[in-house]
Length: 535
Image (cartoon, rainbow, N blue to C red; front, side, top):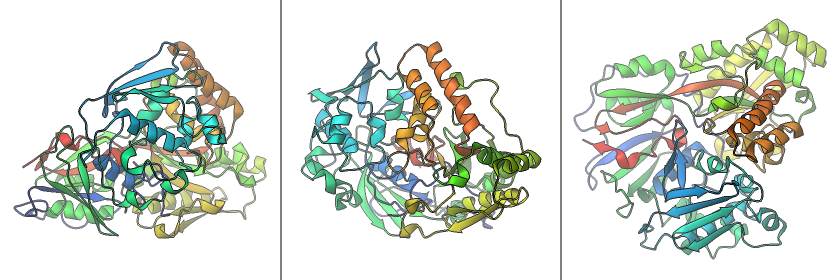
């Protein structure tokens, strides 16, 4: 398995711009002449599995948004938008969620799309033999425990009263449950008529996912050329057919993609913040920018004894010049944050700001009995030049406080750097955390510890879990705020992550593409493709 948890909105691009700003674009931008209009975009990495049940990878999510669809999604401002579902209702006790599906929808192979597909999909995500990292997002659904233990073969809390209605019943009230379905594109609905007969234990690695034959998204699968490109073709059965015939996603380093944006070989590409001014000078190109709905962070592996003392973790935050890193790697296009809690009403006053203070860091390390000979391993993908830039800054900063950091490149094709627990710090980013603090359950609570869930550091504070649970059990906004603010204070003190920045995501778009809207998360960058027009 190749690297996962690639940055969804990471420190994109501490890179040098190729000398292309002054180049004139060719007359016909984008690849043409093969069956109609074509849009060419850049993909920062090769897709790993194209299986939504697999470990999260931004490249996979970007392609899956073109091929498949979800019940709903949250936009960058936290507003819920309908997708496969046209509407939904929540019971007063926040235990029953009912979704009404859009009528008349069909899979690209002509089979009707029904509520059975949704029931099959959510049961598969939750099934222990499938072993999806997203499974625990559904842990509060009624019947989840029985499915996990083998007492049940289906997720009994998810039912289909009729072909166009899906009902999800929870074991306990959760006013934020909708955000777990909508924050980011995780629960892509799968075709029961194609995959329903496959044994759960074999479903995760079924070859169908790398060459899917049924789609509910705006495109159908064309081809995947390893290390080169992904091609998708217009899905004429999509509810709002796109205005062009195919899309080519070239797998390119950010700096190469930026150069090709200037020459017209690429229509849409993420750009490095340091390149922003040069891209803005390119003929026929505009820069779309939006504040990320997530944040960049470095997971601190708390399974290792030398990182279990919160004074050590606090020292690492004090010891990193985060504003300096934002200036150097992001060209100032980002802001510091001191907590994972991004929903305004859930953020308490008085959080520790951890301003850069090497002396304070040294004092904390001394008090914790830090061994200056201990080397911290920080794996990174060498193809992601932004990672190298951030880790270079961090290495220099930590050296000044007596901490040895060893950035270690790895081969993405050789497996996950997190397997085997031989890492100490891991830089990644993304997420959609502003819509509701419930979206933080997968990255902060005890039962979500990796590899079962998305809590990469293995952080576990039962008091924080209790506060998160209290916030979910009531629909009263004031009571929820009180509970989540208590949790935020604990997370701010415990420092399970080194919060590096909330970046501004930048995308270069050629003017032949109109209607493109930046979402701030690389995995969602093409979710509005049906609204694009191509000149």
